[in-house]
Length: 66
Image (cartoon, rainbow, N blue to C red):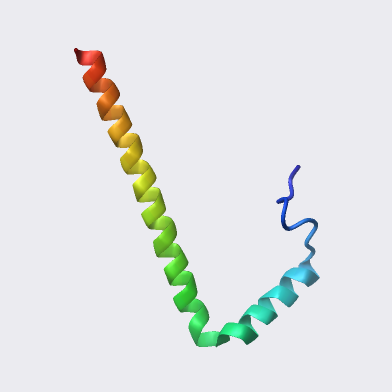
């Protein structure tokens, strides 16, 4: 089970073809912008998860101290 369910068995050739298609569709100037947006989205998601974990820990500590 080392493969992702929706990807199957992708080889190097398939990955190169996908990269070329993405480059043709979006162009060289748009790809860095897309990656920057994805990176910001992932960072915001991680910050949100960490904030929830902190809230849960704070609530459990308040309960334990009572």
